[in-house]
Length: 407
Image 1 (cartoon, one colour):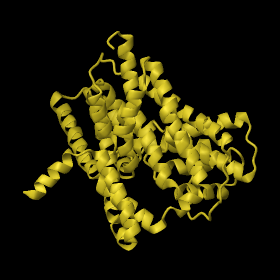
Image 2 (cartoon, helix red, strand yellow):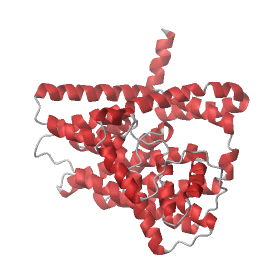
Image 3 (cartoon, helix red, strand yellow):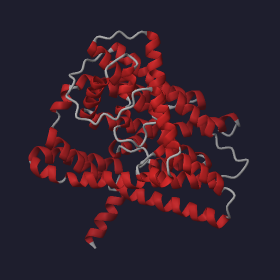
Image 4 (cartoon, helix red, strand yellow):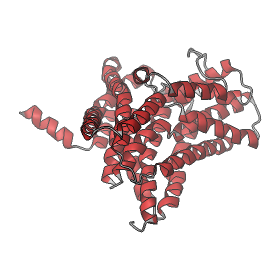
């Protein structure tokens, strides 16, 4: 009876507060008992493993069901949302270029032990993207190939639009069930965060992170600037009123959980609930948010750009304006194809480095540096990416209603 009361109290508590508590307890345990802290890292492994396991099938079923339920003639503003995704990703790359010029960063290149599987040309990236699109659907789900998952979900969703109502109900029930499963996993995030933080600090401490403090500050500074300056401007252009209440609400209620789960796909139910809370059109957010978890990658564009320009500064390579703009385009295109790949944005860095004639072996050492700081970099990147999924969906939806005089 007592345990039931404790569990009910936990479920009613603020998830953000509980995550903060888990974070502080993890730091404290790593400081007091580092050996024990390493062993509790299994909590983090279980949490991350559960998220990785359920996320691909969640995206598949949600997108398929949402498209299948769509009724002809219903305005869902998907084009506006995708346009915002694309513009924001390119703007993120531009901000990263400017920050890298203003605060040039040198790297201490490590001996890379990472398997040399990074793409070396834009053609290779596009070929990989196309091949991922036609991947076997079962294989795409198993290997978390979100591009393939998205394509098959869209195609099947379109076909299921002509199915019977009972079939559509089954799809809707399946989507709801998976959403609840992910909700349960997300609710256990404080325990996962506790395990991840305790094990990470106990094993490595923050000494290596401090050695790359300038690089971390440039990366995080870019993402904060995008979240608090660039995105509000884009949102204001749509809704024509103070964007900050909406921006801050998305950062707090979506970005914080995404920061710790480090998975845009797993954060979909959080964004869905927030979109419902904001009163957005269900036909819009049920499609745009799962799609955004796959292609809306402003944070990844920042990572690719900053790391590649840090490499050029380290090697003394001059970067002109034209090359910087081309880099922004490459980073934007590449970022859209990184979803679902472990270290995906980092592995696109050699492609960007190749633009400046940097040897691939050296570029992989830059990737190794990225993995050192990935505890912070990947968390901030995911928080930015996921929070803007619901932010831009809200902006497009509210903008459309404003034009119709409904808002």
